Length: 459
Image (cartoon, rainbow, N blue to C red; front, side, top):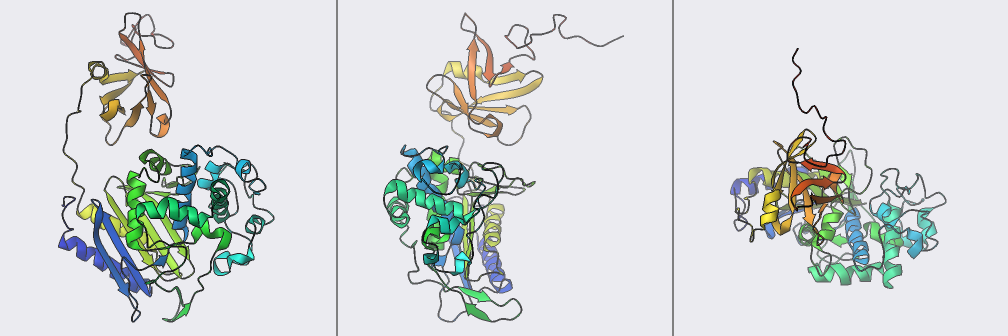
């Protein structure tokens, strides 16, 4: 195991290098670069290349494809946080004539707007953006495949619309907004609209022969917000750290947490989902956030685990063959499993509130038994008795109530209901009455308790 200030163990570093080398060879990628961040810094990086004179390291630029969408989502959330838009607004309110129908900004961010996956022919990733000078050229004659909000359907044109929204509200180009509002504050000077040396060239590898052909690197024009950017493993790890912690110069911790919350109706038995510009992947042992990316000549993957404090980036310059996003997830798993995160020391709360402490302990919703625990910032945690893992968390509000932060209780209000003498009668959570005893006869429980009370069923 390791503390945040220590290097990774030699065995872990060798396992990372072995996976990287195996992936590059078996995936037949001309080059592959990867890096790992933990404890606030890069703790490992590596590269493999089969090309003479071409570097593959954490400072080598690769095209990152759809990871660009996460940057665009951050720009949109900034507009919301400044009060310039509302995520519930229809896009037409800010971008008249967009062609998005009644789709909202929220639905576009989470790919539930019902728009088509791709722009009309010719294949937009291998042709100049000048072929699609207007939004109508990006959307085509039938952009709406499904009613907005009904299902998840990944859409590159949807993020083109979001980029145009940023330009319309800001009054500057998407590229200028990106540079000024994200890249410069986060110190990401190796993330650019076009390639800046040292960078990897994009290649397609023949599926049945060890030969390659150069791929075009087109400027995507209006579709740039969906997949234009070039970046490095080191720069993307800075971005990953921001997506965990937030940065008030760019986006608050609360807003990046919102990005990591499922936002669309994804029908996936594995529980995978999509937030606001972020993919969410659930494995047996952890939840990963990030994004995969690809454009002709390049594949990319960025994943981070908040609980494990590990972020990984993998970048390769091949159109297909090497699953960069899968490799990044495997590198993250190597670190998280081999060297579990050392938890912070337990510390008492800085202050005690006798009334809040009195609320803690056992509560019952009907015959279901729960525990209520006091957390930092006057927050509360509610969980079924005997349950393992995290419970439902509630944030304290100035009016003396609490707002749910998780899943079923997200946005719901928890309040204390008192009797005339000031004593606690019950807790009300979205009309659910939690009492100290199951169906407490002395509490105001909807439906009351059978006057016969609790009884046996003997003969």
